[in-house]
Image 1 (cartoon, rainbow, N blue to C red):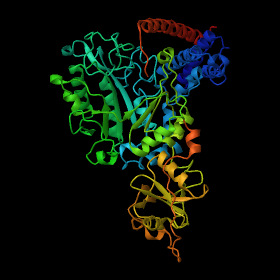
Image 2: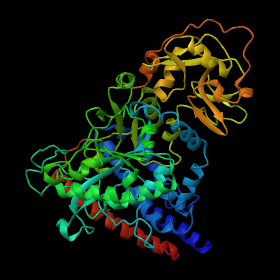
Image 3: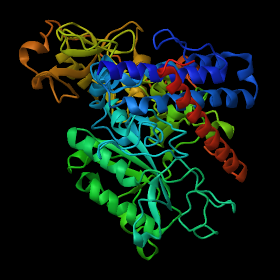
Image 4: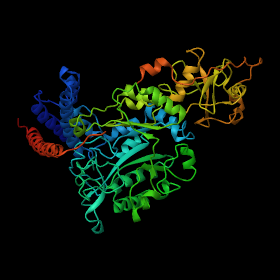
Amino acid sequence: MRIRRRSSAALAVGLAGALFAALGLPAAASADSAPNAGGLVEQCRLSPAASVPEAGTRACRTVESVTSGTAATCRMPLYEVAADTPETCAVVDGRAVSQARIAAYQESWVHRALTLQRALDEAAPLFEEQLPHTHNTFNSSYYRLPHDGVTPTAYPTLTNQDPNQVYSITDQLQMDVRAIELDLHWVPSPYAHPDTGGRWVTLCHGDSDDPTGQNLYSHEPSALGNARFHIGCTYDRPLEYGLAELRSWLDAHSDQFVLLYFENQMEGNAQAHDVAAALVDRYLGSLVYRPTTSCGAVDYNLSRATMEATGARVLIVGNCGAGGAGTPGLWGTWVHERGPLWDESGSPTNYGDACDADSNARRTHSSFRRYFEDSTWVTAMLGSTQAISAGATADMVRCGVNIIGMDQLTPEDQRLPALVWSWATDEPRAGGQCAYQGADGRFHAGDCGAPRHAACTDAAGNWYVTRAAVPWGRGFNVCAQLPGTSFAVPANGYRNQLIVAAKHDPGAEVWVNYRELESTWTPNLPSAKTAPAATVGAVPTAGPAPLAPTPALGLSPQLANASRRTARDSLVLVVALLVVAAAGRLITQAIFRRGRRVRRGRP
């Protein structure tokens, strides 16, 4: 193993050396001392050249594509050495990617906080859900040639050479992602059956638009019949690979629920939809929460808890398509139409101005809001610069966005902690059994007997803070004094912010209906009697001060002010992709020749 580790380091340094030579950087001496091209990408983004409209972004994205592609090539043979060996390829692109990093994340505070946070909106309607989400979850550089008949397979294709993700679907789920996206195309495939005319439902980051300008998501066949241009799709992985991976993870995590979003680009082909439906049946089957009517729209008033009560663990959302006899057919028995309330308009790059509208949509339940970024080279070349920063992620959470589609997600990604709106860092700490919102607007674990204000909510979702400071157990009583309200805990970042806005004193500490019972943090208990009497806290001798609530009907102006895809593929793009593929092949050959020379001690 030691020899293999040294060989791994040599491979990484060799690849980096070849890449640096190509980019005009000094050669790497070792994996520890070498500069990395990831730093070069950052320098490019910070340089004056990056501000040149279109050209600057495209240039930096091209450098990033070369470095990340080279690093992916480096990592492929190293996954089988040891859990942390692929990290040696960080010398190429600055990213330490490995199963060891995933395992470390599982022990982190961020993982614990997001795990606890999932329970807070479980009983809330989907309108109130905030689910960690990845864009084009399937399109990852992780997938590689099989070595044992078990490892997920992938061959060099246009899609996986320009990936949205660096980790597998499984690993993204391990990073607390609970809303995943699979793009479905009906294209020629080596996985096809004889009776499908050589086509199969394929996972591909491509575009099925056609030169006639027909709607990408039309339910009717293209005016060109079966001659649509699925630009970017070649012999990519079939749908069943993605579904089998999801099922395997669900079997190992029997208490988890996943929203599965199908981007339907199957040309309105009836056979394609029936094949996709049959695959869903085979791999997910009884785990799917099925539509009550054929391809019925999602009921965003449903909660995860309601669906889980039926034994379901997956909600599939997408676009209706043709099926047998010109109807949604089998497809419509598994897939919910996302409906007009699903809103993914707007760019997330400079989020802020949209905060007021998103907050209002959350307050009124008038949309299910999604944003996503696209980090692929092709998208950059077409002029799109959609990107989601950690700061924008935190703003979106506070403003009530439901799902935020991230690319290139890693365990160290600062957008993961930005998704945490509930617990403060390193909370809940040992010793405290009741949760309160602190002056920082985050949850802390405290002594249930200490006097604090209480958070109350009404049926409309408004929040109030009592002037009375009482032990946790008295929160039920003081909220009951205001007709129509109850002692509660917020379900998402937007509702949590309403409590902040309702405080009489910004520094006040406010009890929320959330406490630890038998080592499990439980939200929205029905009464104080549910908790052990000895830990509820003593009732004060004097009655509580009169209740004088302050309603919070929206975000504060200060927060609102502070907070705020489509590209048409053309024949020119096809030529560009072919050029990139050819160049990539030449670069890879040169890299491996350089790697062999380095390992043999040649310059």
